[in-house]
Structure formats: structure tokens, C-alpha cells
Image (cartoon, rainbow, N blue to C red; front, top):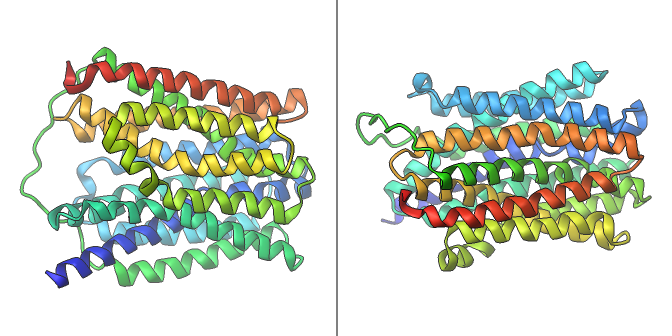
Length: 388
């Protein structure tokens, strides 16, 4: 029993490190590095939005490709490959120039993040389920916030020592390689197999399932605008490198503990109400980041962003599975697509609005308004629980 518990904890920690490298660093370190790239290279908000969207296109494509059955039996080496690729692509950002080159590298990084996410979760969650230790999933999800917090410290240290954005990406590559070494020691087995795969029934496009997908897509649009540009907002308000680091550090720390903090509410209200409340709380933080004066607005914005974006992602999938319990993989695939489309559109719209208005205020308020709409759709979908 003790050996099984030890194995479960080890795998959960492996999941945490995988998520920290592939998501917290591989996807989200672009946010604190972006202001330096914009300043040194003269990138416009529109350019930045295009580069960010390329990453989300890669993530969407990677999630779809990883969902096929071709990879069965190769999950563990594919996790290693995805993390190694993420490290290499961080280094490629340090030697690249131009919007097209940056966009291509970030597109590939998005695919690497998606492969890591799918295959690491397949391994870790199967073992936790077999050991009846689903409570340890919170450790796995905490890796996103952990990676964000570590990346904020990396960029702050780099800035304090006079380094620029290219050195930031090199540091990200080194951290990613160290994370890969840890994962090699922590994840030493593939997923638990439970017999032959069973063909899932076709999805039933009930009104409730349509509503939850609309909510999920709008959430992807709303959260990613702030998740992409919040440090640029701090920079535009002359917040300074330490304020930039503090905002992103708080985002990461809040994200790392968010699943634990929200779980009691989830058990009390169910995923639909919890999802709606999460979107509403995030809308408050998004609006606060530009409505309240610095440093209070960005700090509150970063804190509430971290407290909500991971749990909203998890609650959305849970709500979909409640509506259509017999098609969990298809539900996840469709909702990932809806979420991914929102993420792709968000930075493009946010960057365009910032270009024509000269600041991020209108784009951010539009994101906050969209999150309120997402909350309304999520709340109304609760009437369809159980597939009725």
C-alpha cells in the first residue's frame, strides 16, 4: 500500500513538472518576455497578437492529432520528446528574428505543449485512477502555475542582471532541459491499460452541450487576451521589471493552488455553477487590470487570472462529461476545439484593438464583457445535466 502511494505521488509530481515545462514555460513564458521583444524589435500589439495566435493554432492542431489512436503504446517517449522539443524551441526563439520566424517557432511550441498535455495526462491520470488517488490530480494541474511562477523569477533575475529577451529564452531552454531530466526520473512507465478500447457513441448536440461549448469558446477568447498582454499592460504603465515579475509571479502562485481552493465549491455547486462563477470572477480581474490604477489593477488582474483560468478549463471538461457521460473523449476533443478557436481569435482581436486605440483598455474591457457572456451560457447549460 505504501509503495502504491509512493508511486502515485511520484507520478503526480512527474505530471507537475511536465505541466510546468510544457505549459507554464513552453506556452506562457511568452507573456513576461513579450514586452522586451516589443521594445527592442519594435513589434506592434498586432504583431504580438499574431505570434501568440500562431502558438494557439499549433496547440489546437497538436491536441487534435494527439487524440488519434496512432500513438497508443508510445505515450511515455512522446512526453519526453514533447518536453525536449519545447526546450529546443525556447532556444530557437532566442536566435530568431521577424514576425514570421517567431510565429513558426511558436506554432511548433504549441504543438509540443499539446502533445505533452495529452500524453502526460493519459499516463498520470490512469495510474491515479487505478490507485484511487484522484485527489492527487491537483498536484498535476498545479504544474501550470508553478511553471508560470518560476518563469517570472527567471525573467526578473535576467532583467536585474542586465540581460535581454534573447537571454530570457535561453534561460527558459535551460530550465526546460532540467525539467526534462526530472520527468525522466519521475515518469518511468506508460499508462495503465484497461482492455480493448470501446467505441464511444456519437455526440448528441443537445442545447445544453451547445451552450457549454459556446461558453468554453468565449472563455478561451476572453482569458487569453489578458494572459497574453497583462505584462505589456504593466510595462505601458511604467510599472518596471520588478512589478512585471510580481504580477506574473502572483498569477503563477495563484494558479498553482487554484484547484485546491476551488474544489470545495465544485463539490457544493457542481461544475456548471462553479464554471459560471469562475468566469465572473475572472471578468472582475480582467477589468480591474485596466480600470484600477497601477499597481493595484494589474496585481488584482494577475491574481484573479491565476485563481481562475486553470480551474475553469477543468470545470468545463467536467461539465461536458456530465452532459454526455458516455462520450468523454469526443466531448474533450470538441470542447478543446471550441476553446482553441477562442484562443486563436483572442490575441488577434486584442492586438488589433490595441493598434487602433493606442492602448489595451478597450481590448481588455471587451475580454471582460465576453467572460460575463461565457458565465451566462455556462449557468444556463446546467438545466441539461444528465443529457436531458
